Length: 384
Image 1: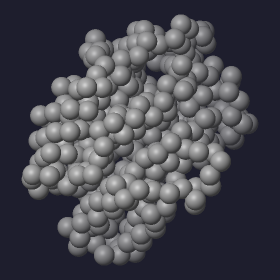
Image 2: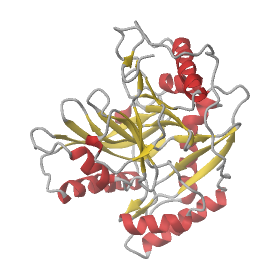
Image 3: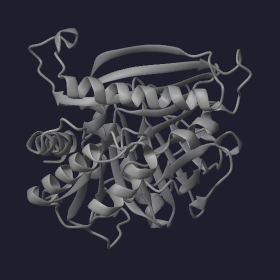
Image 4: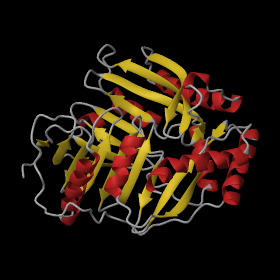
């Protein structure tokens, strides 16, 4: 097998069974040889599989200086890098794939940790929401984002590769990924939210995504009505991004929105921001904004410092990599990092799913509970 070269399958046209077989083959070979693996699909693109025989490397370097690979940060902002030692890119159908030296194509024993967490009860979550509302009414806080966990039994015969393929097909506008490492176990993600994106033309993009309601196929997206709470919550996230631009004295940006967008079984309000890093001579903007934005007000609250403190007080579970960020870095001269929102941590026969909701002074605890249950369904609808 050739290292550090792109391995590409000829004529790939999103054949589900072929993708599932190839992913199983690469992943089985990787874990049998104690390598780490990531598979991901950017919106509108075909999947990429990345394997690294080295341990995950904790990094603090600017992302612009990292070698081609995949990065994975937890809620606390600790960042790890997986190098693209082997890269299988299904977006380029002009060359043959280089198969791993393994015979099995039936599945793999993905890495697991032993840190399974119990389900957050409805009473516990509503109490956290109520405490958030009270804090907003009596302090400088204007928003808090409490989260919760669901412990779910995996169905008999669960296939991680099949779940990945199904997510890719079901949610074409989401970033879908699996990362399976010796250090942190295995996580499956299907998230709609870009944290930072820098394309090969030097265009930087980020987004403010907030407000949630169930998608109704009988109503056009332009006809979706939003209540004041959702509109104000989305405006808070937009203002947070604009204030970060002001912090670095960047005024040359384009703002589009807010508009209603669909994300799997949900709809959200979204505003996008773009900057031409060549025109502004700000070529390290991706790394600079990454440090300024994470964790965004969409996943912790505003102002950030008291929101982080209150979350630590009211949440009894560990978020781990939920509401961190992940994605390819410097792959084909592009970096695309997403907030790790709709995600789950996998164990041998169970999984922990994570979800949260933005709470403001006019929130209703029962409605926030319902919203988080809807968010779980993004992945539960696929895995059963």
